[in-house]
Image (cartoon, rainbow, N blue to C red; front, side):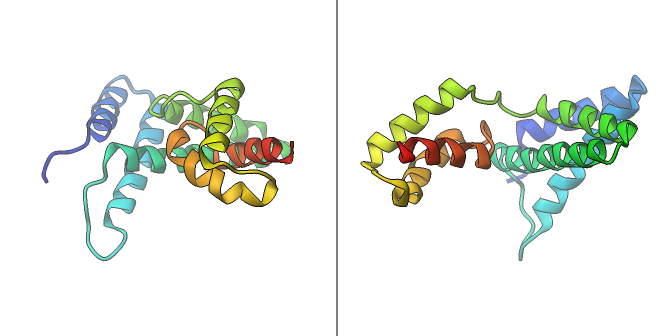
Length: 154
C-alpha cells in the first residue's frame, strides 16, 4: 500500500509550487495541513496511509479550527490575526468538496427523514445515521443537526 492518495499528492505538489513562488501564506497553510495529515497517519497503534476521504476529514477539522480562531480574534479586536486565520481557511477550503447550499441540505434531510421513517425530535439519531454518510465533508455537523432538528420539530 505504497500508493499515496491523490489529495496528498496534490498537497505536496502545491507546497512545492507555493515555495517556488514565495507565497508565504499558502506555503505555511499547506505545511500545516500536511503536518495534520501526518499526525493522523501515525496516531493509533500502527501507522497507516490515509485515504482521500480521511484526508478531507482532517482538512475539514483544520478549516473549522481556522474559522473558530478567526471569530475569537475578531471578537477580541485582533483583526490582523483574524484575517490571517481567514486566509488560511480559504486556502484549506480549496482542497475540500463544495459545501452544500441550504436548499440542497434541506432536500437531503427530507430524503433521510423519509428513508428512516422518523417522526418527532426523539428520532434525530436515526435521521443523522442515514444522513451523515450523504453529507460527509460537504456540510458542518452542527449545521446538519440544526437542519434535522428544525425538520423534525415540524
